[in-house]
Image (cartoon, rainbow over all chains, first blue to last red; front, side):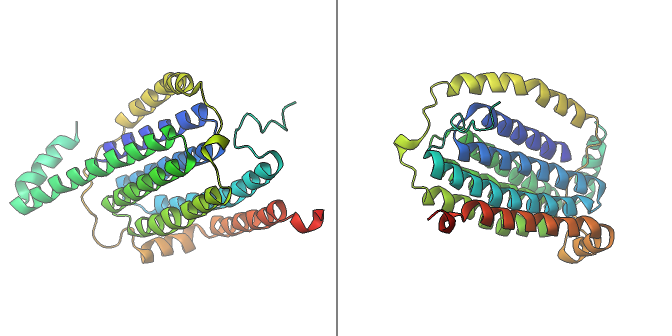
Length: 98
Length: 191
């Protein structure tokens, strides 16, 4: 049943949000965002199956490309911040605070 | 639900083998779903990011199985190769490259408080989305055979209807390439 896939997608998305809210480790926050992207992909594929139309698959590929780009850039930023502060705590990275 | 009669008809019409196949697909779905949720929970709860990354890889592989159950063959392969293969190995290489010791990790004394608070905040959003999903038609997800989800069909769709977004994705992938080199490769200039 297609509803079960959508419910699973909602559960994974909520877990991703909770991870972003609760954790302070940069890598865990980053991977929680990836988890939310994956929940989105699962919903897209489920809707593609629901309508038996393949636009959802194309969009899922694009989400994967966005995730790859995000991974490359975010990891470069994490390396740079770790070089400056030698910390992985998101509370330490407050350079942009007003 | 409107799905109910359809499934009964399917079970009556199909031979015993077909009914077994549907049950088998349901079992596969629940196994993969439980593995995916457990992996995601591990990602949120593990203290060391390397453990979290390993548990997230388990989630990604279970999700690849779910895509196969939804007859998305190309996305199944891409999920395994690109996501579980390339992106996650990049993340793990960076985690190992920084050589994180347990004492380098942030002290998260308030983690459980934030977890419970976050769950309370997120719950109404999740329940709202569940309510929204219930309004959609519920169809059974037996495997669609040919002309759905293979490389050829998705490729035709991609190059006929989605050509301009595809080109924008190419530009999007070029920008982080330049950005990552500019950000992470400053070492020679500072000396």
